[in-house]
Image (cartoon, rainbow, N blue to C red; front, side):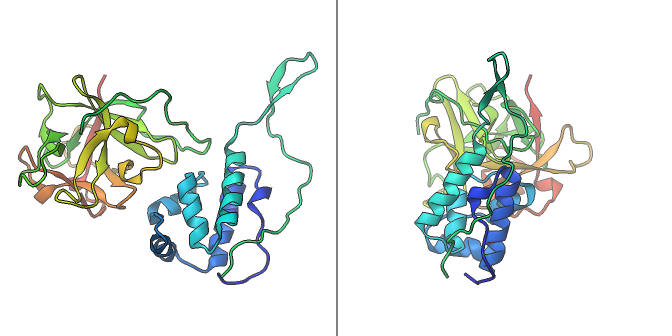
Length: 307
């Protein structure tokens, strides 16, 4: 890491904004671009998508712990530095303690900050059957931005084939025998219900499927094997905030003329690519794949809540 004077410790951050400001300073001190940080993280076996890091640094939202750890390591930090940053993140994310008023009734502190705080210096940085969701939902971080949809059932329709929906099918080549995501009839009797559920960190969603006979699971991007690049439903107990291959961001685009409802690109956190349909096919059975996030509305998906 390049030198350039002392770096404020993350321990002095009093809120999300100050914590992210310390991260920005750390990045500047490293002298590395987002791309270079991602490459260094990958070389260490970490995952640090550029889009995720850019969102954190630009929007002042708390990063997931695994993203923060990968970021600190990529900047040159050791495991002691990682622990310090993670501890600071947990402190910032924690709700403020209650305060008792004159009558002894607890009340919540508002705007509580120390009168003074030392800046301190950090010794930073040298050089498939599904199951129902387990008890407890993913907790939301205080910095989570407003999401375009509440948790609930939706229809996801390819903008270029709006009479079809994202649903369950099989790989047409037959090389992979388990269920994958395809475009198909919206009203198939044996098809799953589709739901969006917030991951609870940043603005990512799980795309869930729910079938009465099998319970609920989430779509997960496969990175290798005969179905690499396709999406398969996985058991809900294997869906989590630390699984970026299961996270999708809804990025609004102008819907094609005559379309009903808002249109979105669905960006996958793991691949940093967007959901598409194989060969842009308009026939049922075409697989959902990954493609460039070009902003082309024809590659978008129409999403409507189901009441």
